Amino acid sequence: MLSNRIAWKFLFLICLLLLIVKEVSWSQTPPRRDTTVVGLIEDSRRQLADLKSNEHGPVRAREVTPAFVSEDGKWSPIKNLNRKTQWAVVYRGRKLAEIVTEPSGANNQLPGPEDVQAILTDPDKVPTIGSPAGTFNGNFETVVRRPLVVTTANSRSYSDPEHWQTSNVDGEIRKKTSRAFLSTFGTVHRCDASGEPSDVRWFLQSSDVLVSAAYESISHSFVIETRLVKRECAFYKQDGHLRSLDESHWFYVSPNGETRHIGDGMHFVDSGDYGGDGKSELVFYLATGPTETIEKEGYILFYDDFRSRAELTWNYAVSQ
Image 1: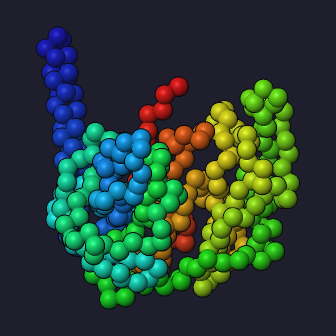
Image 2 (image 1 turned 180 degrees about the vertical axis):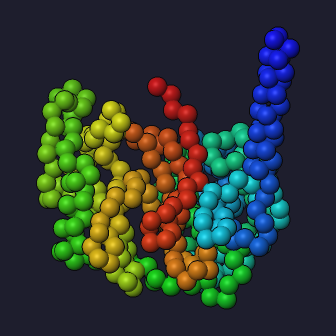
């Protein structure tokens, strides 16, 4: 009887070891070369972390964060791109340049993506869009360049077939978005005289909701960024915890008017047919947390008319 128990325990340990080996092997195996990989050019996190208190960005170096891989029409976050790679730098359906990168080692010493690639191309030949700002800086208290999408796709046009552009939404779309916001949140908790969230619930109205940005496709789909007009010291309950409503919240409005909440703390990066299926994917930068401190950062790729998404995110340890 004792020998049977020992045999079962031994068999269990062998199975567990095989599962661990399989998981490690999968996570370290780069995607097939015939798949499409999408990444982001970012300012070097190593150099940002090394800035002294009297120094300011942007830093000199930039790097590529491999983010998503498309296989059989489905996007997923990439685990490891352990090879030298040639990328097309794209923006708003146009190819801006080509760059070459190679693995630079895991970013184990810093909060952030585990897999980054060093850019071998002359820095002066790596494009920049706009002026450095604090929009995409995460918890780094300095300005950074706007992230740019890079792709391994071998395409002649790198087009954005749905032509997503900034838009001034009309009254009806604003009403749909406001109603969706009120349906999602409904009430908020404001601060009392001591500056702490009170137990009193405030009922929101449409006039409390501000549309701060909007993008429209040629099929008249919309992605809309909303904020509270008075968002200071406003909180809502999620999973029993209070979360700040200081962040922006995004809604998708389909051509038939269906409206749904798709996320918060996001910033639009770019759109394009990265998967080569004739439809546009949209990439957003994500930086969010229950308070002003960012606890979760990364990127989200929406596809299949916002029915599906892939997320590459990392967490920051926040002291209590």
